Image (cartoon, rainbow, N blue to C red; front, side, top):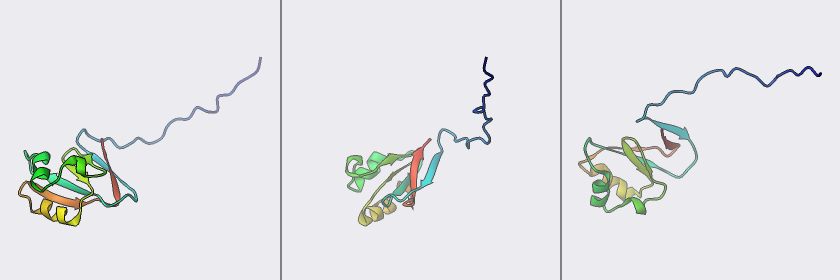
Length: 101
């Protein structure tokens, strides 16, 4: 009988960071410019977008976040979004990819 050693068994070291249900993970990337829109509590993203003349279907690379919305917007649309009373802030996240966890 042959003596067989199991050399592939290794203990895994380190643990992945635990992300809560409403956290987002930003990963550096070289994708096109992306802006994250954060709304005030209770505001409707669809209502805000329609009031500035946008809808989700017209925005490429859209991601819905736990507390906001990210997409690529033209400069004039960004100004309209920033000025909207329901918008808390608009943050440039161009160097990151947004993953909802």
